[in-house]
Image 1 (cartoon, rainbow, N blue to C red):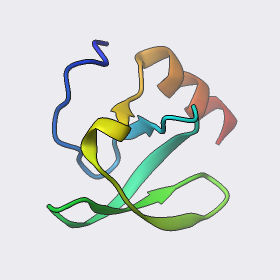
Image 2 (image 1 turned 45 degrees about the vertical axis):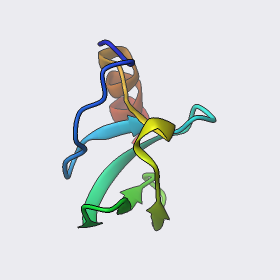
Image 3 (image 1 turned 180 degrees about the vertical axis):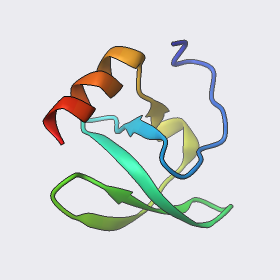
Image 4 (image 1 turned 90 degrees about the vertical axis):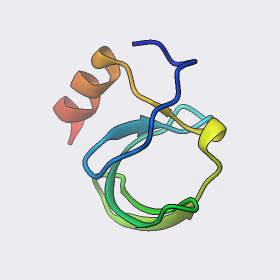
Amino acid sequence: MESSTLKPFQVNDIVKFPDGKIVRISRILSIFGEMVVDEGDGIFRWRFKSPMMVHASKEEIVLWNLTH
């Protein structure tokens, strides 16, 4: 998956933070950059700027699904 191509985030997307953490989007609260993400062991609200977070690759999604 091309990480340099940014596309809009949607609910249930699995994405990667700049620090490498992989999370699933459980709710998008506004189009201006506020979303609720699920780490598997809990959810938290996070305000973001799109270039800071990218969609996870297929391999990372498989890994996330195996560990959650």
